[in-house]
Length: 171
Image (cartoon, rainbow, N blue to C red; front, side, top):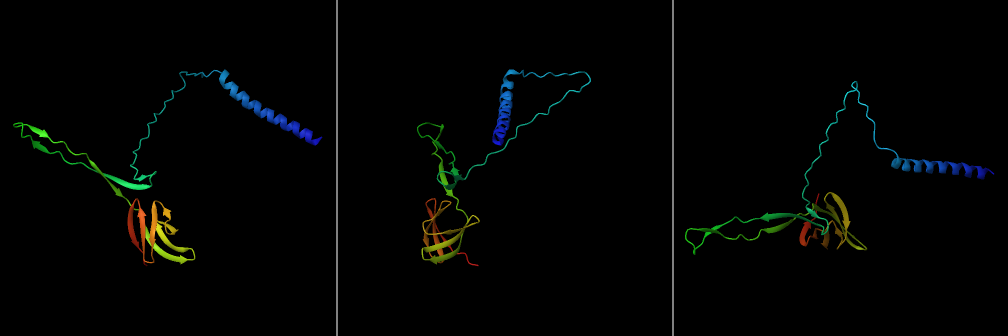
């Protein structure tokens, strides 16, 4: 008997909630959207402030998210040279300038070699890469860096097809 009363009360509450949702939804479509503005001589007019658009400058992205490469492009353009034409008297003809070349400068992250550990599973090094500490083994990949060779005093690292040897940081 008690369960039946609770079910009836809950059913009435649910029907009331859904009824109010349907009423608000349907009421939007059938009511007028015009607002009556009563502007009498005694009320002041309202002035709206204009909102200006916010602008900002986009910065060039130095890291390629798909290839995990950090590059800076340097464009060198040769200056135009004016060469006199031997077939034509007195006229100056422009010589076609070669296409501009692009050099990719690879920006290496800040790397420091802090420790060497040898255990039953092999060799491990402690590296600080861009102010983050990592424990890495041979052929581990972190932020595009791959450890190629490990020794107790130095480390050989690959980054974007370039190799560097990093000496151990001593206190």
